[in-house]
Amino acid sequence: MLFERVTMKFDSLESLRGVAALLVALSHSSFLYGQQHVFIANAGVFVDFFFVLSGFVMAFAYFDKVREGMPFSRFILLRFGRLYPLHLLTLLLWVPYVLAKG
Image (cartoon, rainbow, N blue to C red):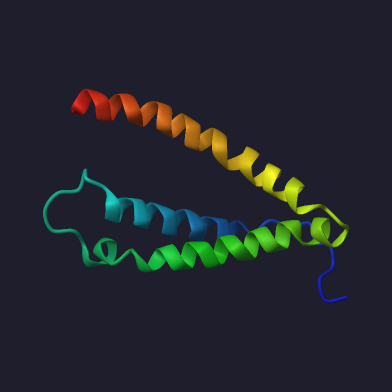
């Protein structure tokens, strides 16, 4: 079979995703003033890199579950439950900062 169940994590890919995310965040950061390093200034290319790696990791993680008949609604619920708490925490921390700054 082309895709056999493999129990391994892609540690190196997860590390690369983290580096790409940090570079994109640094390129958008308002904390860096003046001339940015050329590597950080052109970090927008890492957005594509991050999404391609994320798509591969998610496809690998959910392939067997989808093949066994996991409904799309369950997939969305799992993704939402994983992403939304961090989004909510960030929002709750950022809104007071923006309001105090303004």
